[in-house]
Length: 554
Image (tube, rainbow, N blue to C red; front, side):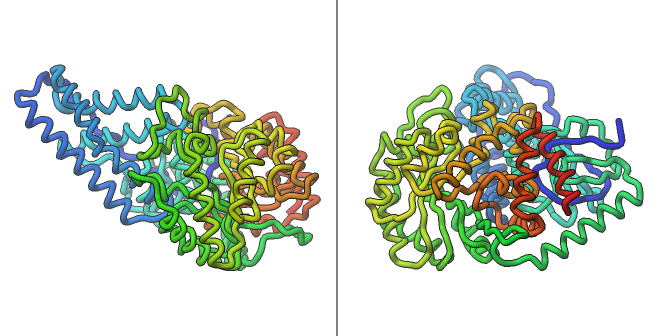
């Protein structure tokens, strides 16, 4: 092994500590054959599944933000009646209980993988649930986070949401995984917890417990057994940055005073207080799926109005961009027959679903307009999964008819970026969702660790599409923002602004670092960095070129 290894950076920050590996999952004992009492075996399985679900539910209640959402969704899986039915079928085939449970989870895992796209991303979650259920059945310790007795950098093949969400940030100073991608649960949760993290680092398999490493969550580099001078330099830099962040406040702008709105993403009611308290200029992405996903009937206009009004009140006087319902694919609705789709990520989701159910859109627009009329928040609306200029214009017209003055388009389909001029001619603004735009541009599932390099938001092909969209905004005089994970990377934020983006929306915790970095560079310097990124052969080269040039500027 060399002195430095590298992976895909997903959460910025510096960490220096010995590594400790995630505890392995329980081993599966040899199959002892048919259970003597199948009914009793089913009862035992159900008891274990309920215990796992209860524990995850308790963890969900003890956390907030994306961690709570992910854990709550995972806690629902063991209670799915179809899982118990599949376990019974496996027992009747003559398997012992542990093998029947593993076989049942395997059936659902194969189905998710076959579905592809977002659904395939949930396959790893089933592995974690299976391991927890087996540990419960066998009376073994739950697999999970080690406790070496001192702060450490956690190394794992991959991390389950249940493990990542409950990390003690005073003990776990950094995360390195061998698998995963920039938009995986590990990446999202690490960023929300403020833990430096690197994923898709295949060389991490050779790291030995207790080895001290220096992790740089911005560059994706891991220095093994760093020298005292290297540690001192990295620590000094981290302390200097922390002081700058503590003093950071106010609207976003470049060093020469060009304004760049810094906004927050908001996805659930319990995130509202923290999001509103952040020093931001408003909400760049209000996800509205929380109003629908747990419902067995469509929410009424009155219910929706009340919910939106709470957000608009919390952001009184500030901007709030509401994304209309983005259901379908991995977010099916209980009160809608989605039918069977061979590839749901490319199917009837987002705005496309409202073609089948137009009343869902009209009800939502009516509720947003009613809530907006009660306060003084600057309310904008935008539609997800728009692919053509006509779709953008029709959505904007519908919003305007409801009295909503500013209606725009999510750009997350390459076709919308390629035709951005025509798209913007029919609506008022565009907001680029870099996660989906990257996935569709590179034809790569977001949870495929081996494809992480393709899913890197630094991919020059993705940046070309951002540039096309931003240039269309400049030509038409309409704002173009970014509300994907890319906006929270301070270095990449410089590139996005250099490409012409006028606002950046991100997790509240990411705003100070982006604000400080932006304030240290002029618009001309951002433009030069953007040109460098566009000339690169791949994402790694783009990141390196911009990192080197940015340091020389600083």
